[in-house]
Picture (cartoon, rainbow, N blue to C red):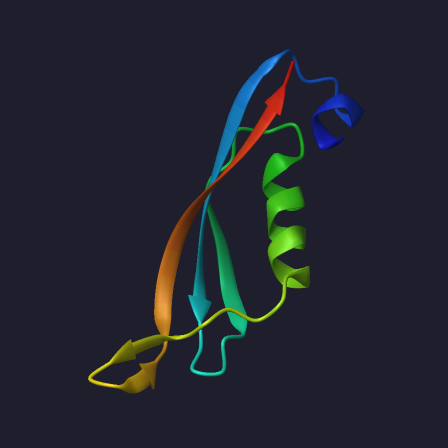
Length: 77
């Protein structure tokens, strides 16, 4: 894991990331808002770039672009 590869001590590490989901469900403009280190921020960004399309947000039945903020938690025992 990224935590073991970077010699992180045992614990929980929360990456806060925001990104745009466009009207086709594609993710773009990934921004790491909080990076606890040990390679977790880069790993979270890489994972989001490789994930499948999301379901886009809608307003009044019309698909709209939307910025989402998500926590990604890593844990090393």
